[in-house]
Length: 422
Image (cartoon, rainbow, N blue to C red; front, side):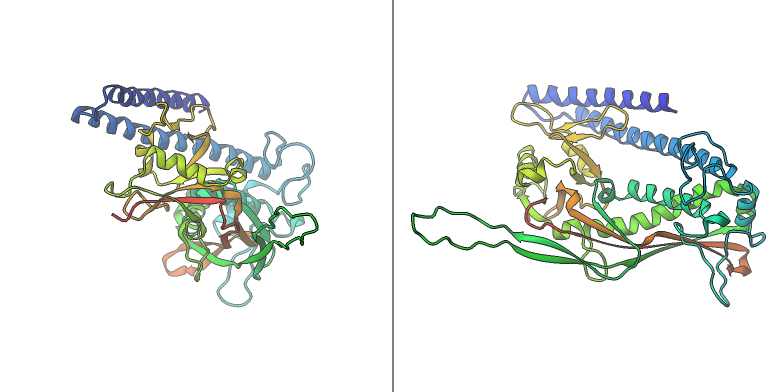
């Protein structure tokens, strides 16, 4: 798998060099693309996008295989590998490394709804028994599946939401009451004082933001036949579906949420850094991108959490842009795990950022550690009911997450490019 990923990355680099050569030729001759060149350019960019998708798919597949191996190892009590069931210490969730659940058959039986065992069902009548994905009686082995689900779901949330992937500050709390995050809104300033003169006062000013816990939910119904056929492998399928659903819901609000009945998005709280020129339908130039970079104050600009975020449709335009010395602003990441870069900072694609258009806020740059994400209740709950869809012989799973988010520094940590209004 790693060889295939490396070959795809090498192919990606070759395609980029072809595209760059095409753009260089037109620039040297001081002309726009011909119709044929434009078609070639579009085809090369389309291939780059397809290669990106294939590389991501290959990496995801490799990770799922690794997670599955680790899950089986935990279930069977194996000592190999580097996952939670590896050698030494304790397993995640408190089970000693030398002990194992009874066998994989018990988990398969739970997936089929057979027997009570250690895994609880959600009953519509009478008391409801459920296990949080990160809580349970370790002595009974209840942590094994919930912990595995929790890790897999969080991984998919990171892949879906650029905010979480960017290194946002995540606050985990056991309960969901509103918490206040203090922040400075202005700093003290100094001034020259004459001999014997009165020293003026200058105190910093403070504010605060409130982070609540909005509940996100996803319901997945699976046929009994599918459960019987797939057994424990269904864990990855359910984790992927629920993780993507919750990640897409929270990810949209993390970018453009209004703060009324939903989290406040980074676009909502960030300030404008650059406004584009008129007559170009909201497009940005190389100078606009450079100005946006320097509109973020130096301490935040130099931060390791400083990143660019934009929609996929903005990438093709950025790939053409050069600085005053003729160097491309966009540099592809050719090594495994290396992101694409603009002016030395990583580029993250998020479908919730606006595409280039009149008055659209289509580019985001800044220190994303200043965006706070609050996760309440210990993470994600994953629960099951065999009776909810009894008449159709469907087994119902639900995933729940409580979260909020807001930018804590509104003075210059994150800036936006806004297209002109005409």
